[in-house]
Image (cartoon, rainbow, N blue to C red):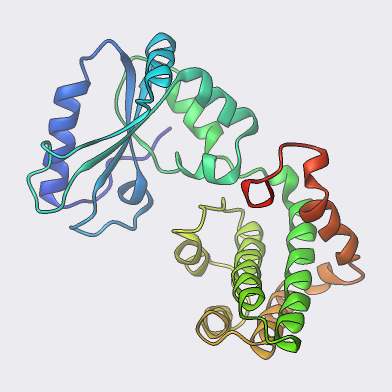
Length: 268
């Protein structure tokens, strides 16, 4: 099942009505989905409207060849600065997300509202897509904890060498993986960077003073702030961090990952 229509401002609801009127009867699209900040509960009256158009396989291939898998509709919004941000996918791609999608790929469909559809099984497929992979929970926690320990060590190296770049990288990575430990314990998908902190701090299970420790690290990066955040995370997971061979796991996940799949763009 998909979420009911979220609470929104009247001008956003009107923009959605105009969008459905324009594309809902187009045979090139089998479904229209409302996603983004409105679906996730982070929207303000000034927010844009995010939609995904599920195209037929033929239409998707045509658009892929023409470079038209994303576009913006401004004329459908009657409020200043408003627009409908449109992305195009296909049923086969949705199936691939359900089978092996990353957390951000899955999160994009969490809370999605079906605006129109000719796919009777779409609701069930969206539920599969937005499912947290609970079978991976224990292994993920161990790997995320190793990243927390590794980047705290890197923060010490940054401070020892007065390296501003390494300080910035270690701060971001430590914040990322501390949040991922918390999200994982709460069986919540990682939403990618824009909503990472917002999703994490509203999770019901939290390390003690987690938000304060996180903000301290982000606002005033230092080894001491990194260690406080690390200690809060380790206390949160109890004994789960005991005896971790974090240098080995860090090497596998961050230095040798190219052995198993394409290297991330950071490492090309």
